[in-house]
Length: 191
Length: 225
Image (cartoon, rainbow over all chains, first blue to last red; front, side, top):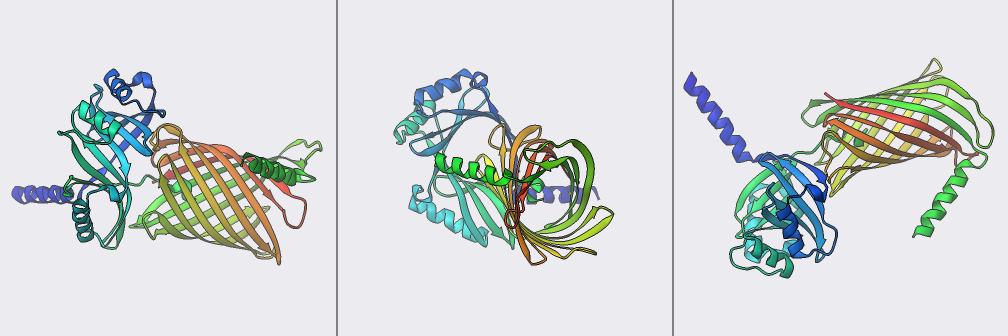
């Protein structure tokens, strides 16, 4: 009896992991005074020309500080840990930004996993050491040691049901993470 | 562009207030929402209208409290896409000891954008009562919701909400248009419990008579169980 309960729990957990976790984030605007100094130094080194807005973001994996701004006609989002160390740099890109071989692999994956898909947003996500990331943002070229991934928000129809899903693909187009985006209650907008 | 909006605003204002009557009141509303089944939801709305003052613009009007009406509506909606629903419902209006029955049909679409949400509602209703002719209404409402803290709306945060609704009304072969502008401040206690307050401005009788304005304090409570 105990063994069958254990098997059932293991099976349930495995299925939920395979189906993808749910995405939870709580974001609130913060003042520049609340931002760790190393994060301010990093931003100052890049020399963004437009105003930088700061946010505190709580997710299931912890709390981070996020800087958002516009630069070179693209929306940038830079994520730092609470010590002010940069975690990643993301900016919005179009489908054409992704190399053709990676595009093909991502398309094949999406077509096999869903009946219908529509890309809502693509962000190129860069991780690496500070110097390489600053270089990447300032000059839009990459030094060695930088890792690029693609975070895609898609509207998908699967088994007749529509969902919003966030996928993370590797540079080669391998699917690494899947999160179901949970819609917040919108009763007050409908009635 | 700024000139255009100033012109539009001044024109609308003078059109609404010239020789027109007004009512000043309080419009409290309670919305109870419940998931009935997969993709199905029910909404029970109880809305009341209380009058505090009534008169003609430019003339003296005294404070005079008066209970006007209560609407009780039940709408059942079904999700038909990722963020759109169709709904059907029934409303009973209690006014001066008389009942008015309405059938309601609606379609809603809620869009999520970076930093705000924009919702559209297209609805029709047909009202019937014992002593009055049937009234048919076709309405469109746009609702903008902007969080006041950060780019997403989270519990224990305030938000701005702006409703703009256009009612096309046909009663006894006569057509009328009513426009509503409702700016509100909302507070999210939890995702399922929201409170809103603000100004509800309604202007009607555009087409066949001097316009009629109603200005009220709007109080709304949305609870999902």
